[in-house]
Image (cartoon, rainbow, N blue to C red; front, side, top):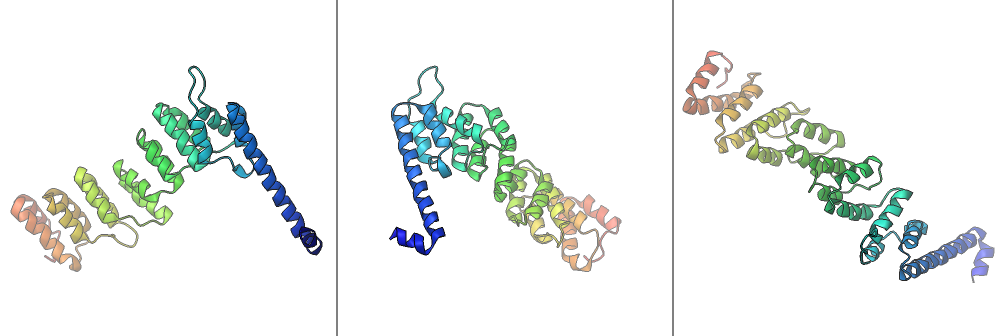
Length: 274
């Protein structure tokens, strides 16, 4: 039957023959790998796995196999031999990158991670970023960015209080963060940072993603009168009729708590729609 197919369609016959040869080669490679492993020739097994056709041996099972080998005193662990062999041949896949990084983090050798990332030897993933974050927030942020783990990037910028970068990055990648959640998160630890973030949002192209009254109420719920006032005095500078309610609110809260501030607002003639 195969001969008839070859006669009818020579290209298909050649392709099929090549595929059979590939499968045979793969079987031979896998068998040879297990033989080397059984003979405790871990270095040779690692080299064979690294060069295996289409990476058929570069799997979690292979990593687990090297992990299972007892480590002899004074000798390089077979798992490190395996990863070292892979690194000399190029870039690790996502699973390999995560497992090698786990070893390095446990040994407190963060500098190795920095070097491999700089040489583009590791495939970045959100999981890798989460692991590295346990030892270095800045390095984790770089991994999140390369992995396009956008929500984690935004959260990392918020933790660093680099609120302007949240807006710039989100615009670059076409991502819409949960601005209300972010503002609430920042408010818990950094009220002045929340004011700055709210003012940045007010200047966004297309308008502020949260209405001014909601932002004001978030500050007032935490009795942050000064912060609410600072925000409103800035965004209400244009003195627009549609902001009459907010002009009234900023005067009201200050008449009750800081009358001198309310007096100053009235004396300066800042508002005319309250």
